[in-house]
Each structure stands twice: as structure tokens, then as C-alpha cells.
Amino acid sequence: MSFPKLVALDTDGTIWEGKLDETVWGKGNGAVHALEDVIERVDSSLLRDKTNNENTLRIYDDVSAIISDILKNGASLAFVSNNSANLKAVYDKALSLFVATNPADDKEFPILELAKYNEVSEEPKVEQFRKIRESSGLDYLEMILFDDEAVNNLVRIQLGVSFSAIRDKKGLSWDAYQEGLTAWRRMSKATIPSNPSTKPTPVIIGYSGQSRETIDFVQKGEGWTRPWTCRWGFGLYVTDHPGIAKFYSDWEKAEGREGWVCAVWVRDYEKWMNMVDKVWIPENYTGLPQMDNRRTTPEETGWNQEDRDLAVDKKWGIQTPYVLFSRHRYMDGMPIKLNTRSNEMLITTQTMRSLVYVTEISDEEAMRTPIPYDYHLHTKQWNIAIPEETKEDFLKHGETEIVDFIMKA
Image (tube, rainbow, N blue to C red; front, side):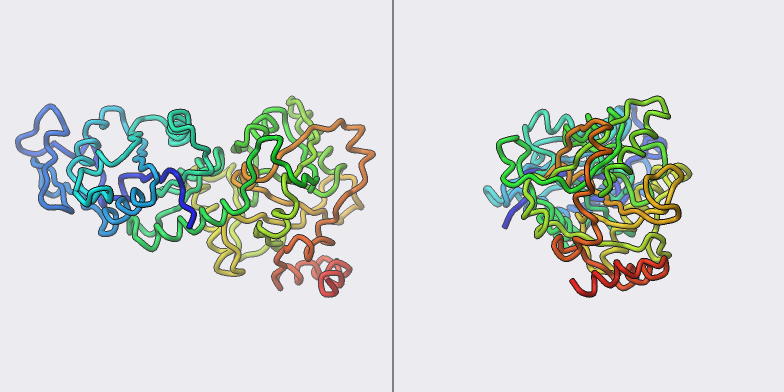
């Protein structure tokens, strides 16, 4: 069974209960200058503050076994934590007092010594993973992060690192660990190397109007966050209509940026059709939270994305990573009939990095290019799941011909 080459674990709230807070720890009787010196081991699962025994860290029950399993499967272990530089020695002390069995010799070692990478710093986790990649030579798609703060799913959005959110403040359990590995395996099954020589059946699957900066990110296999609303989350929004892609590239130009129309390709069309999960969701559905990243905090935005993925799974059985299709309302200037809807597709960074690339085309070429796909006419060929709620949405908007085609397909 396939396994990531690197498994990264967050600290506070993920591998242990409690938080090493420099404004709280070491403030009781017998306070010393070096904060790390106030941490003492009570037993194999509990550390406490010598100056105030109410301050504790308790390692979650399954974490030691999880660390042993990571090593048993030949993966590198990393600890990643975004904290004050003043706390590096403090976290190192805590990590050195908890132990796990090294499967190489069945002996217990401090978990700090079992980790190949120890990224406890003030840098954002995206930058911590950039350092790990530079040092390890591994691709981001070969890595996974377990973390209790959804805001850190930026490592998936921007880099393509698999991200597994630890919910409900219960810490990393064995079941949550296995769920994360299963999601990583779903992603890895469709991965095609990005080397130009490994494009067995490249096919255009749509068009996208983007800024030069965004195109540069995509061509590096990286994602980005946007200052304007991305209702289904961050990723590459693609249309089946080249003229609509030009509409969005013109929008970029109107904002003072260099806008381009891109053809969006998959490296392996057969894998795209058969090994990438896809779902077509209703344009407006109360059971599926849309994202308003312009008005929410980064933390709320992070959980919005995780909650939407969970809702898609619970409602329709489609699990991450998936490609999302939807209809899009008419906007003034779109080259379609007034008050009709167009098709859009959202491709996440992991799918982009594993299977997709883009090439720029001129505005003139975009306007004379025929529509290669009407996405709603390819639901069967592309194995797109069409929930009943989506069919009802088509009918609500008078799009009976789409439902008729789907029913006949």
C-alpha cells in the first residue's frame, strides 16, 4: 500500500493537549530565566510546569503508535509549528520528553530524535514546507500534514501538500491518521509527473482567464489565495467557453494586471476521466457552505473549505480531492445569452500539480476557438456525479435540455 514519503505533525492541539504559552508557563513560584527549564516529565504521557502544576501537556493516546507507524513505513517524520522564535528551545524540550518506539530496533527514543525535520519557527507553515522540500528534494505531493487549525490548509492550497484537519479539539487519533492517509492515497493514484516527456495523452479540458502572476503560480504547480470572493474555495476556475475565459482575462486587465486566456490541459486524459472524482453541485444550495473570503477571517475561511469538503462527502459520498462543477449566473459582458448560465469547474492545487498544466493563447485565438466541451454534455464520459439536487437546480432555471441529456446518457 502506498505511503507518503514525509508525514508532518503539528504540535499544540494535534499531538498533545495543551499549549506552550510563554505568557503563562514559568510564571509561578520558582520561575527561572530559561523557560524550557520549567518543563518536567510526570509520566510517559504527561508534562507539567514546575512553577505551576496546572499548566500541563498531555500527549494524545495514539500519537506514539502513529509516530512508530510512520517510521515503520519508511517515511520521514517532521514536526511543524508556527510559534515565537523564543519558544524553539521550549518546544524542543517538550518533544524530547515524550517518547515513541523506533521500529528499527524496538527501543524507545525521544520523539524529537525520531524526527528528521524540526520546523518550529515564526515562519508560516507554507514557508516551513518550502524549506523541507528544498532540504529533502521531495515533491509536495509526497507529503501530508496533520493539524488542528484549518487556516494551515494553505499548505494544500498553495503547495499541494495533503492536509488533514483534526476536528473537535480531540487531537490526532489513529482513525484520523488513517483517514488522512486514505485521502492522500486517493490523490496520489491520479498523479502524473510534470516532466514534459510524461504526457501520454494530453487533452484540453477548458479555458481560464487569469493574471500573469496566477499563470506563473500554476506553471510552477502552485496555488494562490485571492483578495476577491472565491465561492467554492481557492483553486483554478475553468470554463468550457473560451469567450468567458477572455471575459475574465479582460477583468484582470481592467484591474491593471496583465490578463491572459489559458488553455487548460490534462496530461493523461484517461486518468482524468476515470481516476479523478468529480461532482456537479447546485449553484445555490443551503446545505453547502459557500466561501466569502473577503469578509471572513483566515481561520473562518480555512474551516469553510474543510466544512464544505465534509458536507460534499456526507451528502453525496464524494471525497477529497475532487473536481467541482457548477453553473454560474450571467454577468454583464459575458458572451452568452442574457440571463442564461454558464459552466464552471474548480480544480484544486493538488489536482493541478498532479495532472494539469496550462498554456497561454492570444485573445484573438480565444475568440475564434470553438467550444470543445459543453461540460454538461460530458457528465457520463467524465464520470461526473450528478446529485438529485443538481437536477432540480437545472429544472428550476428552465434547463430541461440538460436534464434530458443526463437522463438519456
